[in-house]
Amino acid sequence: MNEDFLDILRALRANGTQFLVVGAHALAGHGVVRATGDLDIWVNGSPQNIPRIWSALALFGAPVAALGIVPEDFGVTGTVIQIGLPPRRIDLMTSITGVDFEDAWRSRFEITIADLLVPLLSRSALIKNKLTLGRAQDLVDVETLARLASREK
Image 1: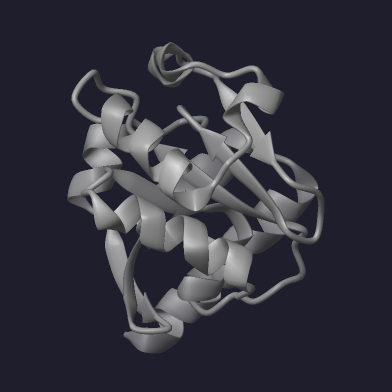
Image 2 (image 1 turned 180 degrees about the horizontal axis):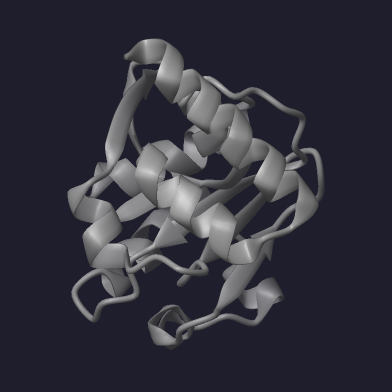
């Protein structure tokens, strides 16, 4: 994981921001490694969490003025903020398909990366999200996750 990704994760953890790593990096945390050009982070858009998100962006040094974003953007379902360019792009999103944040937060899976505890979307929530999306790569990911789960039994 590159330093920009670690820096944003550290900033989010520093003040207790509720967030979950989703997408390809969450897959990797569950043992399915594939190439990706970004880090997908799902943030809880609750009124209590928005100031934490904003503070984390300041700590990270995100160009919020250049991006034209305001704290209230994180309270809107479907917001996606992209920082940087692939392969170091960071995507912050306020929703994902087929999964509720509160449920996903309760079932999160945590891993340690570079001495940092990182919350990931659980395997079951990841499968639900990918099945709901239904894209070809998502369905391949679901099959791979299911195979890994059956080996663990």
